[in-house]
Image (cartoon, rainbow, N blue to C red; front, side):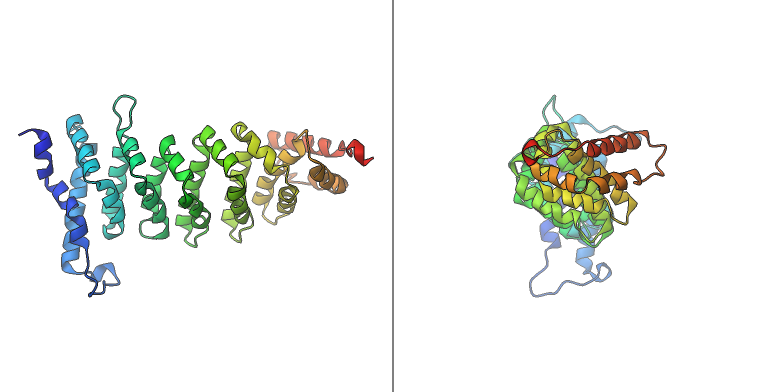
Length: 346
């Protein structure tokens, strides 16, 4: 019998295709609050599903004694496409045990990386099923699956076509909420994904930031003013990276033309945290180094000229071995000392 006809008889695929029914609970029966007290039939469903996931992972990755077979991989991938199995697994991820969740992430990432020549069939498939991406993003709202969804999302972010779908969706803006959740591991993971989406594909990201400047940076300001130290520091560091990336030149010019942004950086230069001071310095220097300072920016710098020179002279003097920092600081001090009012102000 041809493999295409034989494949659907593999127990692993049969089990997974039945997963929604196996895990379904009736509306009349309340679900147990703890994993340990779940119904015996539900535990059995979890066990069977985990075994099937392990078998599929072995088919994809091989073992120490055998390499995965290309024809099996191709047929397995097609079976996943035809049965909408990727979305099915993600929708039911919270019902799978911990090891099974890890297997789902590994299976998803392996199938996603599959290539035929220069084509990436799974990427093409997900482009027609964007709900997969939206469901992964919403995974950050559920503590027991957030990190697994993050692993899969960052793999998706390696592909420009998938990143474009994510950035152009309203769901992307939920990351401004996810990076501030109270659970540190989830917030950190969400920020890693957030950063990857905004930096991986330079031209796409520059286009996105330019077209959605107001919506992005109005919410980004909330991160810079966050009560959470880690959020503030990470956001400030990422902001510096975005502004200094040559692909984001138009975005950078717009950002450093806003006097409110300059005021915020000057406040952050005086933060108690030396790490935040240091990251703020790398954003502040962009305002000062701009050869075409708008009048409002120049006026703020001139009003604080002497104070800024004095402040920067004493700023992080213990970084004596950091040559780049000291060169930049000396340059800023020189630039500020030489500031002159615009001709029309004289």
